[in-house]
Length: 201
Image (cartoon, rainbow, N blue to C red; front, side):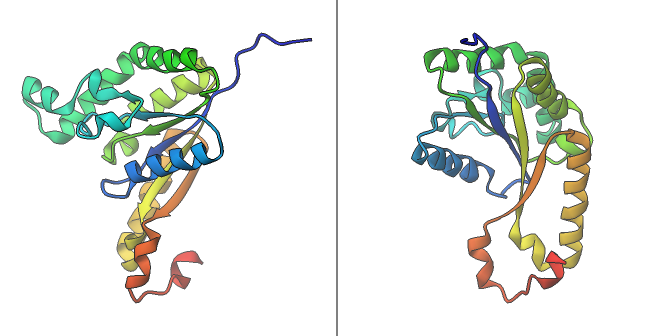
């Protein structure tokens, strides 16, 4: 007996502080999936990331961008980013239709990589990102996991390391989704004389 149920969609919500390597990670993850013959959709969720538009299948900057919001609303970069994400949350139909359109073009595109902004307050103080994730999970039955990238140089300083742990814990609790923390740029770590024993206990 054949089922008419639509195939499940899986994906990653990639977050982390600015400069932690989120966009590089997303592109390389897509390359890995291509090597595994698994098609994916790469989505830019950062309205300030307007210079790499051609690298994404879906770009939120086509809906709105932070520079325009800053000019129109007379706010700074952080305020502009918060307003942008509020706008995205209220206009999720645009994003859903773009994703569904890609899946209609190729029904095997069932893995999505979301490249989110780096501003920590979007995850630690605001609810927009959490609500966006919950919408995809509850309304569209997307199976999503959060990947939080942390620059490995945070391990060099005890106070910075502990601060990163606390922020990561805050994100894990507030986003209410499967979550994994990843130390990024570890290939650059060997240039520093530092033992990881303390950090891994």
